[in-house]
Length: 213
Image 1 (cartoon, rainbow, N blue to C red):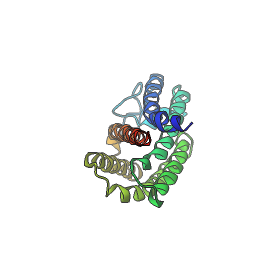
Image 2 (cartoon, one colour; image 1 turned 120 degrees about the vertical axis):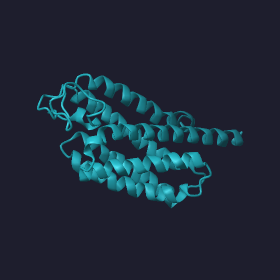
Image 3 (tube, rainbow, N blue to C red; image 1 turned 135 degrees about the vertical axis):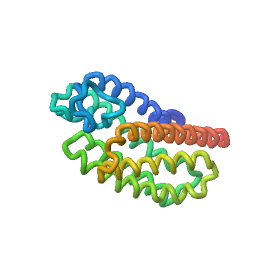
Image 4 (cartoon, helix red, strand yellow; image 1 turned 30 degrees about the vertical axis):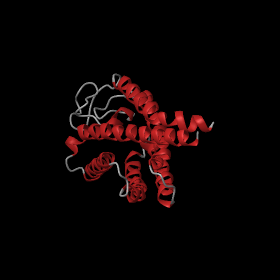
């Protein structure tokens, strides 16, 4: 069990992200059309639709959304993926302390709330995940300050900054026209951060196992 937890389970966030992208892409083919930018448009638009648009019961164009069921399943997979990610995130550090525990607890709690993004409480969920997610990252940043891998630190800061920008745009509606494409770019940067974290944890676990032998 311990071998599975240290050598195989850290692959789950990477696998989960790939599965999410595949399922979401497939689901988007059934999206009738319509976005905040262009309500009368046909089909799902990479440049004009938000990711959550695919989970709306009724599209922005007023049509029944046939993509909702599969897109919601994809979202659940993404939520579980990110819960697992925050469980492993503090393990990039060589220490275990209050900061690493708070990062894991608040991060996993944030992604549990994130599940509700597919419900009618979408807007409240965005607000709560923004607040709790920031709380989770504060102790993480305290530990990250002493981390030696500058490139990894750079991608973390960049991913967090992009997330804050997306959050502020959604809440204030300033620049909302550009949010769909910015959201997907942010998702791509986040995916790099997730994959990089998993690789670092796997290497750390392997080195620990080698030393033990």
